[in-house]
Image 1 (spheres, rainbow, N blue to C red):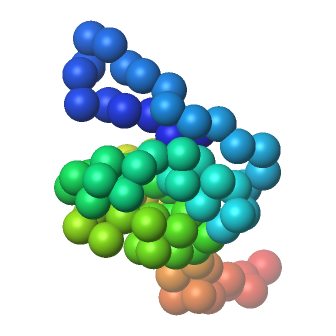
Image 2 (tube, rainbow, N blue to C red):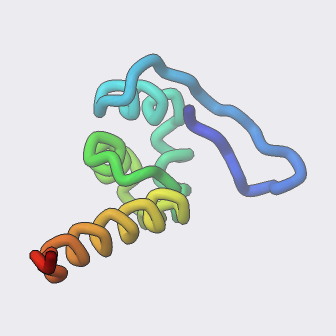
Length: 93
């Protein structure tokens, strides 16, 4: 789903595409004109490499902003992995 979030009081859906791959991202982005794509300054995505790649190709003047939910989720996963690796279980009986 490609949305315009420039006006918080009036969110606008610009394009929809089936799937969660790079082709789906490209299908949404190519619905915008070249002029519209070059005017985009920031885009918000999850951490999908497919979406990041599609945005990198089609939004040349745009900076990627990863949404808070996915940043917090990834931070929790990394912290949990580190905790599991650094804390040795004790074998006290």
